[in-house]
Length: 63
Image (cartoon, rainbow, N blue to C red):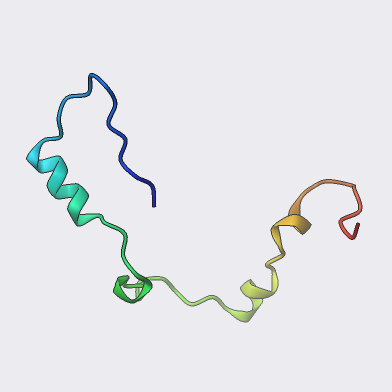
């Protein structure tokens, strides 16, 4: 994740803003609940292509 930037002239953060920032600190994968995300089917997974192959460029990607 990114960091918070405080610029010259910005008002100081409120207690509420500080509390919300603390609640949203980055979490490890073990702390994230992925149970609400449906599993992908084999058909869906078979449609995936690497990003470089999805581009509409006509240049040779093997070089």
